[in-house]
Length: 188
Image (cartoon, rainbow, N blue to C red; front, side, top):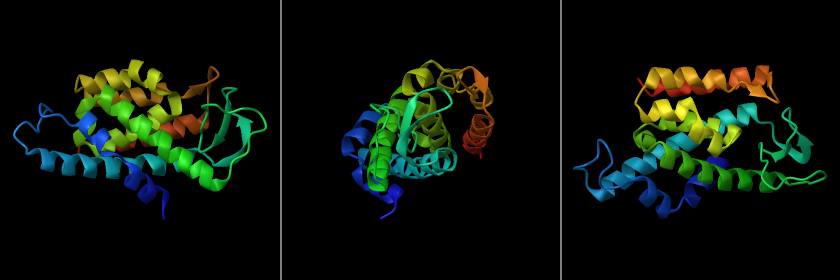
């Protein structure tokens, strides 16, 4: 079973209830069952898109290492609770990515509820939040501009997050360009 399929099967209905309310913009007269179906489709596609970006830019390393920002990291870029000398299996790394991506998906939707109808923008924002952390994402101009429906300004804010440890990193420049392009695809 692929990582994306596994993750999609583990999404709970509570995430859908959290992110889809009867007063959601653009969905006011839509029946609840249809809202859930629309939201589920958005989450499925956004998950696939976020995983694709994460897997391109986060090598899966099964032994803990210090990232360029000096933070202990393991698996697909996991930093929570990681200590020197930790080792994971590939299965553990994949499962942890699924668990954490659900957390980030929920956090991004809570911060930017308007993304519930745009899998491209949601996927780009989840990838960014996974890399910089939810609290940094919530304070970001990407989040602020998204909530103000300033789509171009939000897209142009992705490249601002190109540093680790105060240094511009080529990998982050490329990742932000990919996230920006995905975000802009939400306009099509």
